[in-house]
Length: 432
Image 1 (tube, helix red, strand yellow):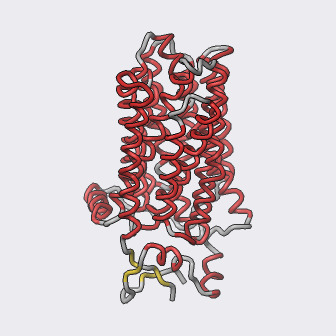
Image 2 (cartoon, rainbow, N blue to C red):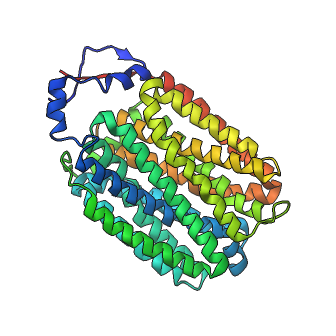
Image 3 (cartoon, rainbow, N blue to C red):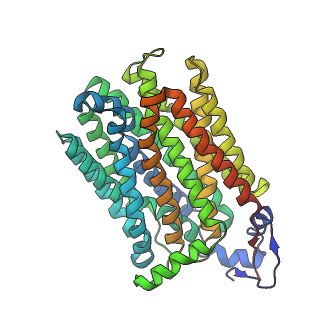
């Protein structure tokens, strides 16, 4: 029997809600296992691989320009802030596109929207590699962001609908670990290839990689079993939109998303400029190789999902933000042996925090989950666009200390929000 809300249940703390979500009777488990995807099954393996490919492709395409921002500055005679637009314009179009693709997926289906989006993102990346003008690069990157919005807005919703609730946090962590490896792949490949060939060649190879990932995703992802199409009527969309904002916790989670991605992109946008200049004076290839710090996310994001039922989402989120602050502090030194572990801590904390916050949105959203996920990711990528570009102003005026101070203020705000979220009571779901 499907879970129902016990109207007479008292409000419990967030930790208790996490525990009670997984309390189901053996009879109910037998019924649920027939429709929901559970760990250890063939469907679970296929779903995990498909969403891993989606995350891998999305972040590879999204961040492939990040290590070559100095190359753009040199080739097109741009300032660091202007060069960062190649990433910012992509993320802002992703954010805007999610306001449309999320509700569209509620009406036409999840898999079709994600499959088309991955294919278009690959095509636009290949087209970007052939551009000879800065305006052409920005135009293709904008279209790429619009295409990627169909994956980012829908993947979390598909997981929350099709997977057994007991395994949702773990599976969300695996999906986000694909994001971390994708970010590494995109940064590493373009950083090295641009140094030995050109940025055109590096983007072309990323586009071909994304094309293969799109094909694997379409082949592997199981069909939806719990999707129920909803109307795209503007009035209903507005009602659902207002419903999300009436929830006590969701608006704060949206702001957490803004802070997380804004901090992450700002740091990695301008650390490349720092490493290329004194006292480090590293080559473009070595700067690209430093992207291995993304691999920490492949461990931290699923680990955060495992720790959540034991310690609670609020506690794990605060600990993850604390890791980011500790890593940020370590980057103030001029020794690579201290800065590199700092970047690793920062990346690990980011992917863990995003895993917790994104699964928390699916947990709190009571209806129109596609729209709720879209709103979270709208703020998530909007934070990337705003903070990522604004960080260039701090870099030009105050150097790395200014960039770090800007990030520290954002993360402190995130800690305050996480502490408030930890204390918000939620209505516990019960199973008859």
